[in-house]
Length: 288
Length: 268
Ligand SMILES: Nc1ncnc2c1ncn2[C@@H]1O[C@H](COP(=O)(O)OP(=O)(O)OP(=O)(O)O)[C@@H](O)[C@H]1O
Ligand SMILES: [Mg+2]
Image 1 (tube, rainbow over the protein chains, first blue to last red):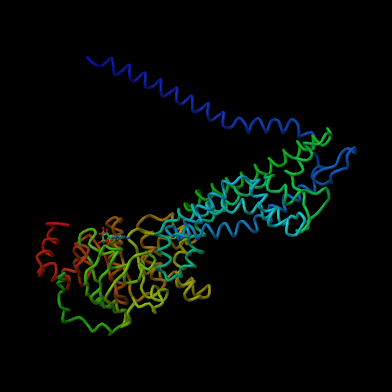
Image 2: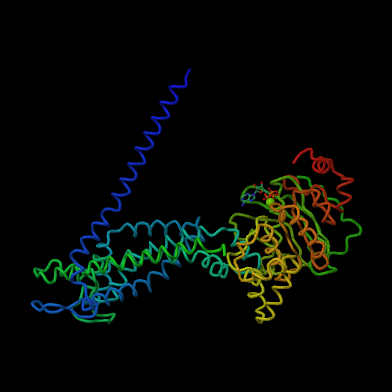
């Protein structure tokens, strides 16, 4: 005698369920919409200026057509290299410390500070780097820019490393210790190696994150119209070049800025794809 | 607290006769404020298998892990008493734990192979501790796998991942890994708890072989298994060593009522 009510409530439940699924699908589409729009816009505006010269030629003076962003491209790669050379060892080391001393007082202080640093607006990092690395020596430099970017990388890498090391089962640690491995060797050969794919992914995400940063470079690397690979000289970078070209009054430079933005996006995309691949191979590993 | 410990059986050889003799004297252990072991005295005799039995949580693993100092990294633990390995107190601060653990191998309750190849797992200890040549290492790995009764099953796939092995094979791999280190004492924490009867039997046969050269301690919840593989049995209850002695004696004529209650299945 109650057979009708349940059946209706089942239908209602199904309808609610379908509505919720539809809503989440819409939300998922909306979440990816900005990226799709940006990519489309960049392709439309920038692809036409993207040619071989863009990658190999130096910027031309105002009024001349053509030219490229070879110096900015090289500058960005160099800044990433400096930032990684400093940020990765420090970040991974800090992450190892955090993971191995999870309960310690120093560890919780470091963890908190690194979270704060992570949330710091990048312009603040730039001003800080200017105060301590540029002002004392009285000129902008690639090194100052790289260090500012490293400061942004460190908390990201440290937390990623900590998370990944925590995922390494304690039983593996014990296995190595029980075979007579000293603690530091256990950390390096078992813990770090097992966590390595995850740490590499975290490092790549951090690189992708800083590759397009502009604010920390404004008062540090500053930008440079000329070719430079010197650590102590101002250096150009894609985001800086895009910024100065975009606010210039010249049509030619505008389209170069679009092309630069497209290249920057492609760079970040490629790094993210590599990160994904590394993550995938981690989970695929082990079962032959 | 009172601890009842049976006197040493008369046929027990003096503990310093052969390498690998472990003598535990009045050993107590604390996890922070919680005392887990109470005044344990027990001799582990070379070329014999000692089984540790007792209900869950009675301190068997704690006892086993104390012998090769696996508690070192746990903050807040402390102990009193002595654990002598060939006359030397392993708990002494001056003892090098790294060397100690090379002499005392351990196989954990849940198999824990490294996520590397079968070969690398077995070569792990020797590579660090003895730095053998490549051909010597091949030999060591084969020997260890043979002794663990795993060689025939894995000899064609030594370079494949150890995680591709079955549970029972993984457990034997962990035994091989411990054996490759050439320990004098082998500690096994419920090595057969997750294995099928055939794999269990292979491990038991393996223990018969191994005890010709080693001091073996095995924790087990399986009383039949304790009866089959061990020469001596020690019964733990609530952190105390209630009774220990030759296995057949302990099972057929226990001195303590609590022992009898446990082995007849009235509690635990
Ligand atoms: N890391 C730890 N911190 C605090 N207490 C612990 C810790 N490990 C074990 N204990 C406690 O010590 C007691 C003995 O534990 P232990 O693991 O030695 O028991 P067990 O006899 O091996 O049990 P089982 O047969 O279930 O493996 C238990 O009461 C347990 O709760
Ligand atoms: Mg246990």
